[in-house]
Length: 75
Image (cartoon, rainbow, N blue to C red; front, side, top):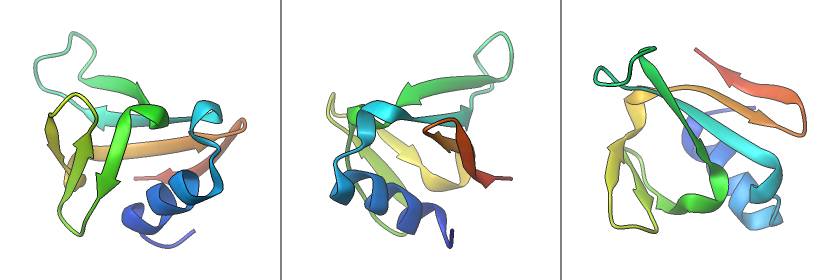
């Protein structure tokens, strides 16, 4: 898979968000990361991920994207 943006757009366009999760770096989380369902993503651009709840996350915080049991992005 190419970029994080391409991977997320592929998930949204194919309608498979319920089978995918995104792992993000989070300094405030106890383990240093947080997982979100790809279904919580409204859209993505070159710099940010926009969630349905109104939150905006920097795309550089994405560490892993897993879909259908396979890792498609791992940084």
